[in-house]
Amino acid sequence: MKALVKRKPEQGIWMEEVPVPEVGPNEVLIKLEKTAICGTDLHIYKWDEWSQRTIKPGLTIGHEFVGRVVEVGPGVTGYKIGDRVSAEGHIVCGHCRNCRAGRQHLCPNTVGIGVNRNGAFAEYMTMPASNLWPIPDQIPSELAAFFDPYGNAAHCALEFDLIGEDVLITGAGPIGIIAAGIAKHVGARNVVVTDVNDYRLKLAADMGATRVVNVANQSLKDVMKDLHMEGFDVGLEMSGNPRAFNDMLDCMYHGGKIALLGILPKGAGIDWDKVIFKGLTMQGIYGRRMYETWYKMTQMVLTGFPLQKVLTHQIHIDDFQKGFDLMDAGKCGKVVCSWS
Ligand code: NAD
Ligand code: ZN
Image (tube, rainbow, N blue to C red; front, side, top):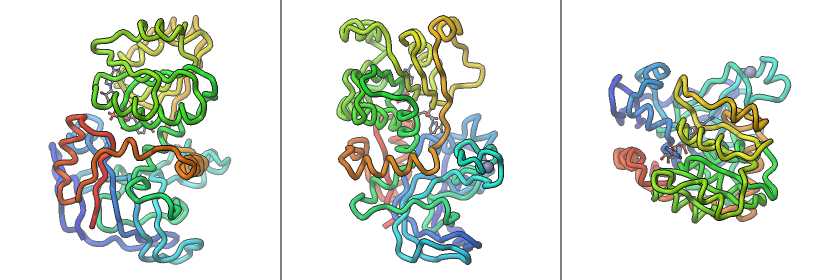
């Protein structure tokens, strides 16, 4: 079968012929319909410092997908051949304290598909049946393909009560754009989104953000004045940029709450006075809640949440290079690749 493999320890990704994986007990074999490109895939493509530390060459990448079950391993119940599924890409151990307490998103033994084991940029992949998420017929495959980052956005945005609150989102990557939509969907008052990329800020505005701010040439403080605001009640940090995080700390209202999703560089400094004297609450966010986040995002789409607004490019997998180039240039929302 064909798969996108990180073969060499250098920039690039290579389409190779690899064996179809064998299905083990409690697993299913999935024939991929669509795989979406994540920022993480771009990091691996570019072979940055994190990838060099984390990725073993020879890995099939990819973790955002939808496909159909084509083989069912021994012990699997609840799924049959032909079912259309996506899946939680974090495979947890099932026996640590957090797993046993129903807090699987906090399992310290998490293994990520497309990072620590072969992933979804392939014609076929195996998944533990317990990780599968069945996709209702009403949800098109091109949207189901990126439930993984939609789940990051939903997990982060729903961490704190947003009803009537003023929300600041730093970073209008695909996740920040979706989070802006969710914040409005659940009843936030003002949703302000910052970035340095006008193309992406426009997508955030289309998603329903009250105001978008290009911090390269506009002042967030001016926008707050315009909106008659003293500070933000909730912050969603979705850029991984230390400057953006410091802007956020500066603009939070006293007693505000921050959910941190963006991955900051090691040693990124912040002004701790802002945290302490404003009495801020900060919560790290990793992955998605299993499976409450999946439930909520499915129901939001089924009741009209316009997830399709972040989908800007659908390409054939043979054009994968074009997809990675688009991601690198930041001239896209979600890019979804089709296997047929
Ligand atoms: P992305 O890289 O596409 O988006 C980040 C955005 O931040 C970009 O559009 C960039 O232009 C913008 N940005 C850069 N400097 C900025 C500044 N000074 N102010 C405001 N915005 C600025 O990433 P994404 O796929 O949308 O993911 C968002 C973040 O979340 C990334 O850091 C990613 O690594 C991280 N992430 C975390 C988890 C988790 O489980 N914690 C999961 C997925 C992604
Ligand atoms: Zn565990």
